[in-house]
Image (cartoon, rainbow, N blue to C red):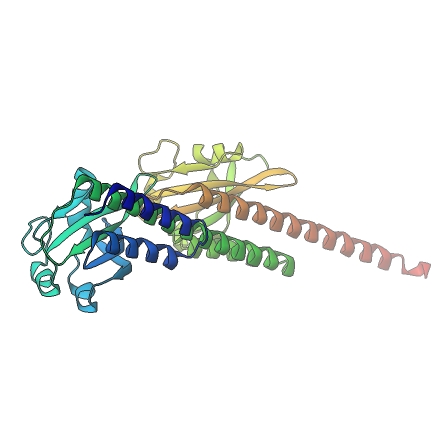
Length: 348
């Protein structure tokens, strides 16, 4: 059995790898290899887990057959409740333990004992790390703590990879949208592109851009994507409290549109299938002129980096509106000047 010094050296080795690369596969590889080698395992695997959809998605593994991966995995709804309750799942005999299912597949794969520990990010379980032994074995508390520590490292690897990917995608999206603003003065096209791209990028139900009238008591729907025609084509709307807070410069998050007192038109939102809403102010040189609103078909939490992206895109949208209004004003002034010059053609 490993000694305390072995655990320390293994964790130190993993930590050094984290300091040298952001590559997700390289980080998961060192975690899987370290676990297998130190604990003398048949296999180790790392999965993303979604309890609501009962989905287990393989990210990285060594030692399992493709057949087992395709047909032998126990679902998230079976595993995650145990991890939330006990902190780990231990099955001395994986081929008969009632905490697991698909016993025949495990027997065929040559799996005897399984230890499953959670992969967490900010106290939320996002995945699992599973340790497979080919013969029955027990795990000491130190073994379990070591596996849990490596699973935490896996969580860090996944979060680092997510953030790096997110930042790269953010940069591409903002660069693309900024380029489109500079290449087009058609405000309708620019705002339609914004609402479309943000829906695809964040994988949400829909989005809209609402602009205030002069007295800032009512809203006009000027662009949207993912919404029904009847919802988008409503008459000018009275400013509801959640938008009024946006008018004051606040980003407003509504977790449940049917329960939140700040929300008007609950029946319309229910019919449209809208649950969570994020509302971000749109600025121009005249101050706040409207709101960029995101609509979700289920309860959705927005991370800080996601909110920051939406705020940036709302600011760019404000620039587009400002540029278009300036272009329209200049065009009208030029037309007036041409007409005035033509009316005095006798001067020439």
